[in-house]
Length: 322
Image (cartoon, rainbow, N blue to C red):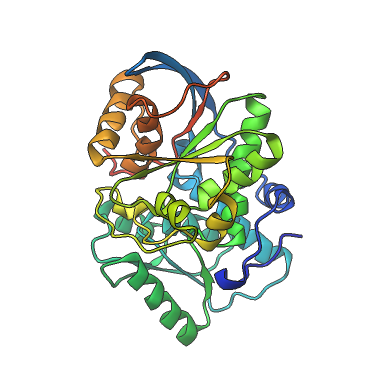
């Protein structure tokens, strides 16, 4: 049985068994997203890569994997959720939680920063979530969640720093091993670290490198690895709604804070914009800026050559509709 979430200060590393359990819990709830082998131009010439099209996931992002893991675990444990659920989110984690909560008929409150994209706020409301716009930073929205949860009894879902979020994200990497055995490094965007923590957990067991890519304006993983602990960073990036965490999560640090199994790459907002435009112009793939960060590691020439083709995880596409 998947371990229930512990406070970050008492966190233990998420293990492969947690990810395997999550896969069984969410089987039938999430999509097995495809891999597309393509050639991408880099400063050193054409390069073969595997695009993991996670933007086709239920809810539009990989976040559905963690959200469904949380609600299905509680169902399996007969946990009561009469007060509903609550989550702090710039949009994507909230949308995923709304989809998961709607599947079990549970109420959800999403606390989003006042500047959250209108398209994501509209989608949250269309999915039946109650949206509270409060705070200018993600730290502030988490404080509001704490207050509202204490008053209402709602169960708090963490957008990235929980066993459910990390183990659910790790199921993506289990798929990769089945879809393309012997693939190269797995390249993911990093915000609070739930995705890279889950992928790294599987990578340690399967022997592949995980590469985290983040903006210069929100280098949570990079700074944590340099400092030897999660540290606060000043967030200044156009991708702040999804890559705007001010500190790497405790579970992500346990998985990725040191060691050769993880590498860190920093890119500029312009690099991400260029990578997003490239995906559209060359492949007609429309993704969020945060998703394009992973490809920017290739298009800027920073991703080292590998024997097997690297996997570029396109983690989401919650964009305004036509």
